[in-house]
Image (spheres, rainbow, N blue to C red):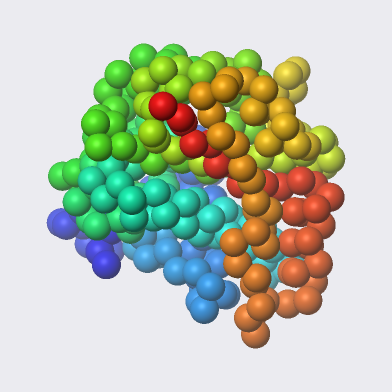
Length: 289
């Protein structure tokens, strides 16, 4: 399946400068490409490969890192999250074949183009510079609408067509928001989108302290007050409203057993630690009528 817009060639090189916002977007994209290279039986991301081939960027240092066990697992972690999200989107679309797909904090995530029946409307929400880079690198798709907005400005919801249902997903996004912002998003969605589904990933207290604080600092964030994380998503989030049904599964092993020849024992050990000690979870919220 060709997920990029037609008209691009690998000769259309786009220069990426180190230390820029563009670089922060391509690093997780490159991780997904490397996961496809290293674990092809589990995951493939053709869009990531196509985009990386279009970049004028020195990947040599990243290549060295992703040959280590720690970075291999990081690539695997990002890929498992995408697989989990796509599973939940496609599961919703089986009963709502004409529903929209809504990617919150979309970055360069193009997996929505691979979901559903290839006719589903897609809505992507992110900051202006991110949307601009997305359109430059991945082009536009006739069934896509790009919404330029901060997620905490809830007016973006007015642009989403959910008349036939909608599957909303946020991959690696809500960690950067305060708990009250995530709650406000969910509560507003209960008003506007009954019958729809929201899927996102979370970590628990230990995962937040050991992993997310390091990642947030790399992105220039030093104020960690009241950011969103939870050890018990079902209990904590269910109290927000009687118009939601909350469930969760392990991020790494909740959907796939990862029992493949290319998956090392250390990978499965780290996956178990992630799911059971770091409380890395995929949270599904059904928005009730």
